[in-house]
Image (cartoon, rainbow, N blue to C red; front, side):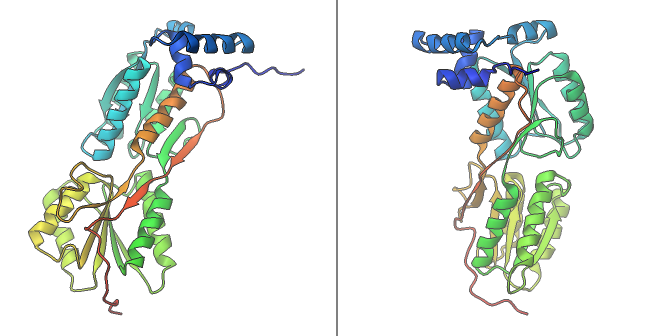
Length: 342
């Protein structure tokens, strides 16, 4: 028996030659559209025999046009920009965004996501904690469409959108080595995060392939700023070769800059600094901060489109998307001219 595949909202968009969002606006009446656009979509719907069932689906589940957004915190420049991008997209698409903070705690994450589900959200966007397994089980059991953002989970049930952490870390280390750095320190918020593991693996792999030898170190920030400042000061005060410091986000970057200012060390010069994320103040420091710029708006757009398809009942294979990040070297990273002392 031949199985006939039912047309999806993606097929309608492709046939009409318009975006998924435009199709959604026409079908749901969330935003006023032009007569020409409506005619294209309705013609495609009729030609394909597409049955729009999102409203009936929402009524069965008593769900409102609200999308839940769960993030660990709002302190970093990247997460703040990501939230802002989702707010903008939701407004344009005619949705409300309900945001919760998990405080980096898996138990808090589980409670907050459970609350979102109790509010009958139409879909979920989740930046996971270190261990989101219980939360993912809850979401899967609820049947609520969800997309995971930034931090790969290894869970094959959900679409994921992140950026190429392994590739960009490899490229960053290569550039630092090319500038003469034979000691590299990577400072992270948490080693157990999936993105931290990817970056650490890339750091070690690239360093192992370097000639001459490159020494690498990994340090966690921890919860005590004073203890972090003491540990970092001890590391940087060692009378050894110049060192390049890579930090995992803008929060760690600001803490590290305070330590460097307190130490009064040769920065930039013997010490170089490169940060994941680009905070608003990156070009206001002296020297200007070198950054790894994440594709924030692209991640938000791709995640929203994937979620929209799932909310419209599409059952295509799970997608794991990796967007490309970029490195911008500024005054905080200098070329090292002296040879390694070994």
